[in-house]
Amino acid sequence: MKLIGPFKQIITLNNLPLKGKLSDESLEIIANGGILTENGKLLEVNDFDILKQKFPDSEIDFIDNEQIALPAFVDAHTHICFGGNRANDFAMRNAGRTYLQIAESGGGIWSSVKHTRAASEEDLVGGILERVNRLIKQGITTIEIKSGYGLNIDEELKMLRAIKKAQTQTKATLVPTCLSAHLKPRDFKGTSEEYLNYIVNEILPKVKEENLADRVDIFIEKSAFQPEESKNFLLKAKQLGFQITVHADQFTPGSSRIAVEVGAKSADHLEATFDEDIEFLANSNTVAIALPGASLGLGEPFSPARKILDGGGILAIASDWNPGSAPMGNLVTQAAILATYQKLTTAEVLSAITFRAAFALGLEDRGVLSEGKKADFITYETDNFQNILYQQGSLPPSQVYINGEKVL
Ligand code: NIG
Ligand code: FE
Image (cartoon, rainbow, N blue to C red; front, side, top):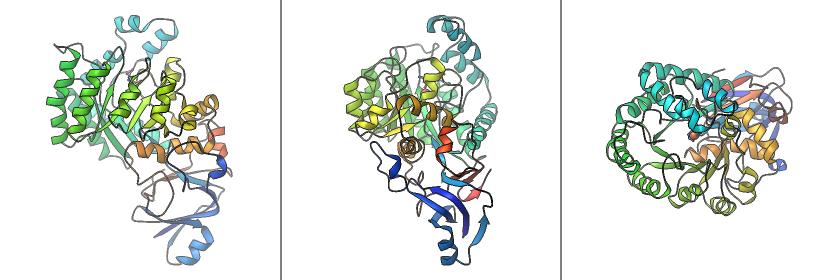
């Protein structure tokens, strides 16, 4: 049993609804707080002196300078398993080149596919761990990672095996997702529908057999997969027992509706979502995941986070960290910027990168500081939690705990 504290403030995020808007007054803040952990879980979060009296035998980890604590963050959408770099795409886009011109000069998703295919599994593991360590420094201890730059059975399995191997070398939780339906690869002989069938018949059974992922994603977009074929694909993946998530409404609207209809855990992007589809999504238990990093990377509008919350929906915010559209990889900065443009309360932003994001991944054991939850939490050297978003990511956590153990 270990007691950590005293903290100037503990922001527990306890007792907040899963859905809808939140006022900052609804946040539970424990002054002079203590966190009691045992076997990787939270035993009690309460006044430090009360806990000290109640559990006199507990080992004490004293926090001497002024610090606050809150649940560790969850990044529910990344593509951090990749080879190569697309700095040239970014420069060309900003110099006014079109998507087509960038693709023709060797850029775009296909360029990441070529570099990822050329990388060994070990290279990929190294790249993942380097990026995971950067995320841990930002206080993120649960990280979803997609395949989707292999785009054939061997290369997709290589990516997913690399994620599985990386998991053995980090204390952070890595959540793998099969995104073989990112794009029909140029070297696939057949239609996009045939490629989707190939994923269902060849790739997904292997993913199951090797226990490489429980989740399946697809990019529904004019330039990728079309609504009808995508819906069939998702229903088949669901039948095979996979949880579903969708890259929806990034440039053209219509696909978040499909995500809701198939019972997806989340619909991610939503930069182009129709107002009536926002309402449809907000009335469901499909989490709307805003990806401000992609808006910032491409110069596109932000997702309608305010409308989703006002409509009663579940909002999460993720980084979408990838080599093309979202190269920054700094979730707190992005969430803080989204908050200024969309007018999100501190409670809404913190919930969107903790328990609401965890819900999108089917992980209801984390994201709040209450009894029985996973003891993943972070501390900041400040006397006021508002400083975290106020400093827009430039205030790093001073300590990061995973399963009650200090990892940073
Ligand atoms: O989430 N939208 C499609 N997929 C990624 C981009 C991947 C890439 O450009 O490499 C995204 O933005
Ligand atoms: Fe993405």
